[in-house]
Image (cartoon, rainbow, N blue to C red; front, side, top):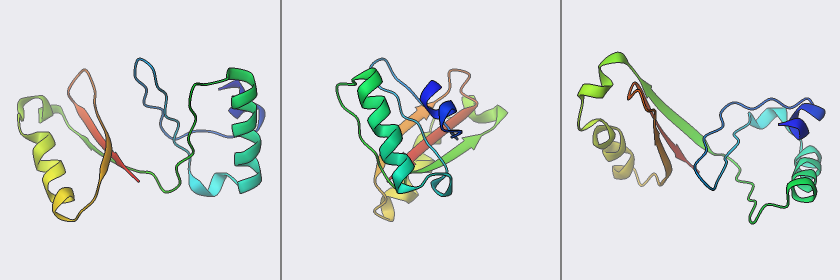
Length: 105
């Protein structure tokens, strides 16, 4: 986060797992030159095993108190996307089961 702060770049969403971290930005907040600078600084400072920049990454999120009681929620969100040949890259459901998000490129 220090690198992003140094360049006055804020992020929109930051899902993470045990061995990975995804940072999502608004596209219009970054120039190609700034992307290169930030990626180089991350590579130099943190030396990640792998780093990938993905353009046009979209997030769809469902939020609601009653979601924890809907056992087929993910299926009802993902099925229509699959019918439109929309490939899902990541699914994230909060521990409270009040939010669920799907991300795609």
